[in-house]
Image (spheres, rainbow, N blue to C red):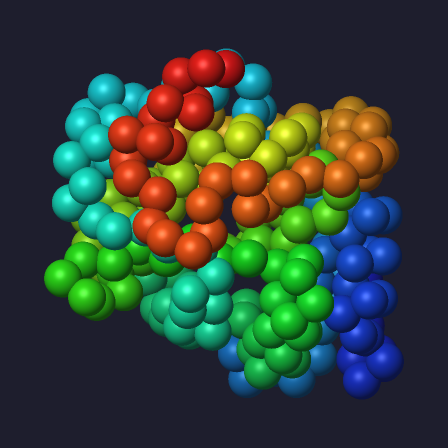
Length: 224
């Protein structure tokens, strides 16, 4: 379900948080479209945090520390990366207004990025919204093989360590399905969302001042 917003200028980061609490999120038709529309899918994508398992090949990549992973070091660069054309996605829904809103959420501590580096270059990452004990994944990108998957593994470790209950992926792609994403009906999603909005999680439960190693991230996931 989607409804076009006719008063884009009135949307603030605070309004956006209230929308997430109601189960809706904004998108744009394209990078050049100045308007936004609200989306509430009939089937919602989530990655169940309990019992999450990392595929063996990916676990080897994560453990090798071929990539350096940080958080909140290059938020705007991650949004730029997510807005780039990707194979199978030539256009982007991240327009100027989307960018401004999520930068605003980042500035007030409700939006975070995970950055993946290789030889000093940003080669992948993701960003999303944190509210209560829910994390709403917005977008991810990669410029090197497995970089976005490594970012997701580190995100899940951080969410588990911080006491999060819900990881919302909005939709399910083949890429996310391979990592455990499932679709659930809207009513079931709303119930999970309501529960996860009770209480406060800690995105900084794992270190934020230094890169977290792959072994550290995998050890957290192995405990679930």
